[in-house]
Length: 211
Image (cartoon, rainbow, N blue to C red; front, side, top):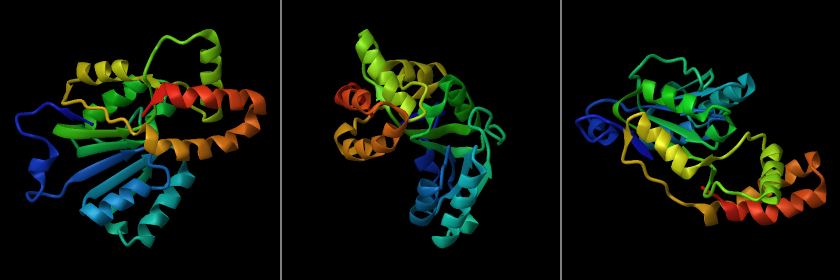
């Protein structure tokens, strides 16, 4: 989590005074936005570059009865289609890792956040930078299987946030909680990489990446 600088304490001080506006970047099928709208009563917008995902997100919102408090549109988080200072909070769930220019994504997020707004990202990060050649090769195998150019390093990502003026930057490690689902997600990628090479990669990657 991280917050953009302002005199007040962020999004929480807006509750009760006006509806909280949330943007979910790389929203996919809209799971998080529809949940936030249903459980928190927020005005939630979601953008995704895939028109099919946007259609599915809208259908998901209708099924959950939150179509009126959600809005989904085709959009690229490298060039967010909203004016400056629009949202009280921005979320990104397992999506920033797919960007080849993560700094640009953070710049755009900062632009559309109101002063004091909050950013929440749930994603994969590298806990160390120095890898041996065999380790780097195994990491590349995993990333290619997930269509991820690279995982950001925790310290470098924090530095990028702070350079943009974000404060109160915190990282929570949910490694143990995500490992079972991460292993299941790995199975489809075996079709695009040799089986033994993929199996070897599994032994390393889940020890070296913190989320």
